Length: 381
Image: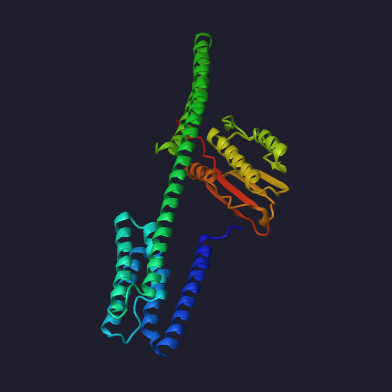
């Protein structure tokens, strides 16, 4: 069973909301004990508004940041007009919510809006110092704390932005490498079909000289080979639109047993199940099945050292081919998430061929990689 991303988001939002509530409660108690019972209400209300906007930042990143800055500015103005009857703003709890908004904006927004939000956050911190009034010598403790929150938000936001950019660049390199591999496979597929067509054409010439009435059968075979080549090229070229164990291009799943045997020498026991009947698959489907099994077994070696057994199942039905690789590694033994960049390339290949791929933890123990690939009918020439 794979844990949906939305549940991860809900857990993250709940944790952040707990931090916000704790900060607001601590601030309210401190102000009530120092200033009086109701002096925490204005600042607490502004902090609640900003923190709620921070929790909604992923849905409306720009408007949440603008709204948070606006609420902070209004709180500063209100504190200044109150002639020292209210605690100085922005309060630490408000600045904490604003820091989350600033960090999130620096991570996800384009450079100009992100810089504007970060600059607005700094302006709020500086303006808060002026609301303290001339009676406060030097920089107040609240301003120092707010400034530290802002610096932390900028540092975290820029760091995450850099990590995201590197991850996107790495994923793109993986996709391009997969397309290059497919280009080599396309060469092999086309060479295989055209070689067969040339041989059949030469044979047809001989037949035409000896038995002209049998030429029709040779031409039908040449037409069928051409249709197969055209269909294969259309499917594989679709993967190349954007621009050390090679997968086989020969039809059928027979080479999987060799792959499993090599894996068994280094890893846990593998049980392989393939169709019993003699099947013929398009070369691009065969190579994709091989690569999926190869990637999944490699991930078991790298990330699930305590797995005791692995099951590889390949099934064929009228709708297509299904391949699933399952291991029984205990959850505590998996060193880290096995999503990996290798699966990015596999998903790119599978989805462009019209299939689907899923990978994730199973209920109880182990990891599962499952892909479904349609096997198209022969297209007419």
